[in-house]
Image (cartoon, rainbow, N blue to C red; front, side, top):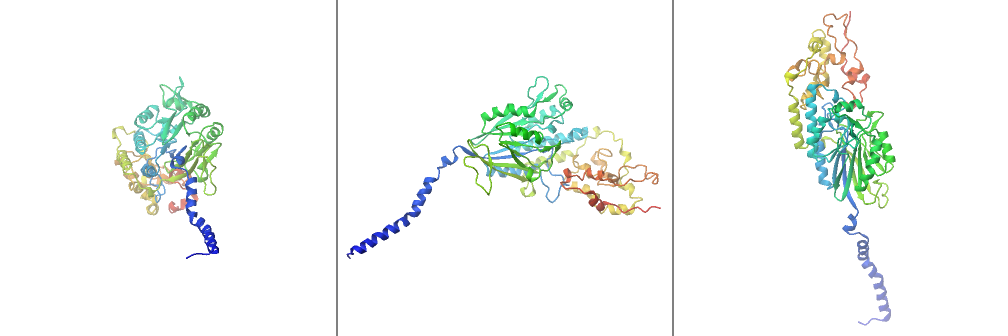
Length: 497
């Protein structure tokens, strides 16, 4: 059918209006394809890196039973499980330890019969670190409390380098350990530098290696010497520095080239066991200072999207987009809690240690000169019947059972707070029976002459310091308020004539 000119004009106009709409999605797709970089363009010059770190492990392999039993935060077994899970999600995982790993502050004072457990436990830590895939560990000041020769034995067992760029021999100033290591993760090279705290007393360093005394170079000068060279070879520089936070902030502010610093958070000479969330990360200059809780309770993580030439790194935020061309990171602390379950391989190591911990060589036990000073609750119960009945209803009277529930009853680092007179009245397991649980003399002190002459040898009142030996935040992770807690275990008053 022939159409008139006006009709043809109308059809043409309609086509001109409809065709752009019909082609719109295709044009939009073309535009998106033009603006979207190819996979090669997306990955060129940048890479993903997942950095996991621990610091101040201080000899912990698992969670002491007294620490918030419902949570039981920590343990190498959970740490290993988390690392395995993280490796599944991250191809380029780097695992570092910031030092003070094998021993704690008081371990240098342990008696000979206790040292065997300490050294065996340190071996468990080293082997666990091997199996988890640690790639470097800083030599912290606590790590050399058992002497350099012993630490050398642990170094032989380790499948990762122990680092310290400022611990030297005093005679020729040569390095005792490697100062740094370079780790390749994907296309990214990470230079890891270790600096031990530089305020260790000289007598301690001499005692650690008497035949050839040790010395320490300045942490600040060591950083100035090593960082520039490491920066030339690597994309990212990580400093493991077990120095005071004041020193670490100075290094971060004045030494260029440090991207990340693992800081143990030592302020005014105090090692912080627990780190508040607001203190866990801070930026000084171009350096990110990161921290985390002690005793293996939490790991620190940095999920990094690295871009060549993208320094300094900036934190990702939900509120604002990062500046263009900058490397970014997402910081998080991961709590080692029961939902992580436990790695069966590391569980076997821990169980083997616990079984070995029960062995005490009877022929090498020291003389226990103060054994006769302990009366035990059995003696007290003869006269103080009402007080004994009250005590038996408290958690003090079942303290030893809580250790047995976790197979920790012969751990020298656990048992002392769950018995009476460990190391003074008994050592061997066979001799423990009358000293089990927290008894009268744990709180009141020793008073061996009281049964013979009660009037002239009365028991003193309980002091707060007696409780704080075990009920302190380092042990229980809870603030202990003496006036609030004392009534829970205060025995009925004795009627006096």
